[in-house]
Image 1 (cartoon, rainbow, N blue to C red):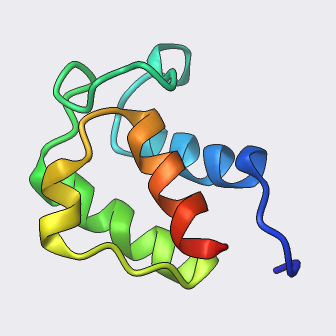
Image 2: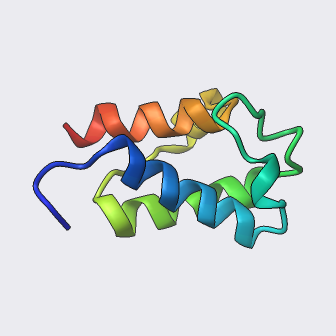
Length: 82
């Protein structure tokens, strides 16, 4: 992992993870709501684990509940990583 985490790196990890949950990659945009993508609470917990492994950013359950869109998750990780 490089010292500086870019938006593109975070977006790739999050989009790839959501894609593994069964959502078509073409549907995953920054504005897409997790609910629209059929990403449930268990998927979000798994996403939080992936983010922590990749970037060392821990997303608490309270924080997970506040993330509504893919962009929210990307911005959260970027804010916590810097």
